[in-house]
Length: 381
Image (cartoon, rainbow, N blue to C red):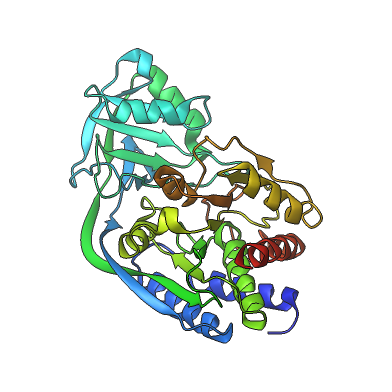
């Protein structure tokens, strides 16, 4: 590794080239081994901590209307159909259909989708995904209820066919929805490490970043992984006063399974840590970035602002401390722990076009990495 810019290019480029980073896949496991190797280069001894899950294997899924077929992807925490699928009338909610069409670009669409999933009125749901960018492509939703799937089958489709599907729903067309998938038991892995402090009686600092998700996710996950590693490199050259624990989790898109497994292995850590630093989605994204800052209290907010303001191109939007944060920091929030979290969005979020180098702003990643390394060193003593 040479300059920080060289390191960022190398690390995010390698991460991107590995393939689709979906939890429990061969790519996911190979990526864990790759990351463990870089952790070792940073001066720590990595641990691969495995956890079990029933991985979803999508099968051909689509909606048929007459002689037209639109391919899609099942929602991973809903039920699935058989090969024949479900037939019925497609329509909006006010038409009392059996198969509901929900347009993700409508205001309140997420709430409408969740309400419909808990309703007994629908045999299936078709959800048109949306994104912050101009490209029409499938942007799958995460599956927070992955371990307890519920509701009717939900087929996710991209917005390129939005107008046509809306017309068919308005006409009450009869459609067939196939949302097929199988499940198989597999293992996924977190990558963990510890930099021992000079005074191990002090409460530790925990630095976490997710490393799994949909597609290649260069901008969604790359910046967080880089920040995570840069903090390690700083600690290698300046040992901390307190223990600093690191975890890069799989299972992000499946209800944060990896972080839950880590917390199960370390009961009490959520509240015992002096703070959790969460390097979440879209840090240093190049196109239409939407940076957000979540903190648990005034002290951590002031500290984050102190280090971010001189470095980053634009300050992230801040949110009230009692607001549920995005990403894995919500698991710490729910348990009453202290945290600072960077978790935002960008134009290619959850889409296949989130690729290195186009979706990553190296200079922005550098600025966040410097800011978060400074903050981590302050918290670590």
